[in-house]
Length: 241
Image 1 (cartoon, rainbow, N blue to C red):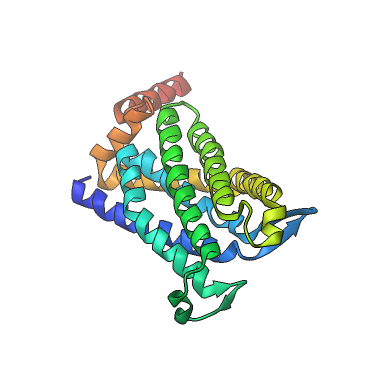
Image 2 (cartoon, one colour; image 1 turned 90 degrees about the vertical axis):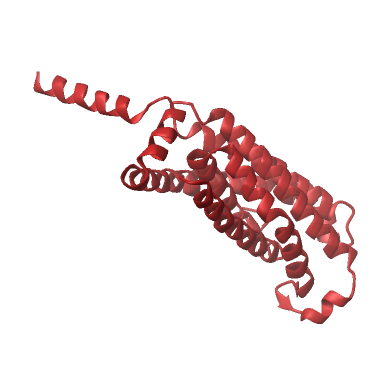
């Protein structure tokens, strides 16, 4: 694909990242209890970012994955602060609340920014190292495990360690651990199969519209389109025999 196309894709993906960060910052204000453990609704939305990043690295490479993070990180910081200031426990407080500096809110915004950047860069690094494995699920699963771990504990430690909110301060590690476990569970059950479905659809589209890119992506996994055709022909011959 031309570089301009990659840049447009990166911008759209960055917008998607910002949307998920905003949604997660809003939903993290709502605690839930599942099987007796404390967590927040944000655990169910944030894994979408890892899905988008893994698909970007698989199709366009680690460089484009880092480009998406670069495009999204500062807007994500601003959006995180605005969402956290203007909403409190899901209640809209109005833009006038932005005129007053709130340390509690600022910590959450900085934590969200730090967790996002560190977690996503870790996700890109791990996924890129494993993208050539024969089993397609190795890279997205491993990157989700390590990326979510770094993101989750970075966020909760910066945002809520000795915070003024007694619930979050007293249950910090329990909430963070359950939040992380939920993310991995949701990723394994929902996002890993979804990753495969989307990847297959994108690969079929690339094979028709951008065959050179298709060959490049396949070569990263150790099998070019020529090898695939040879394998298919070999299989047909064996069937005929």
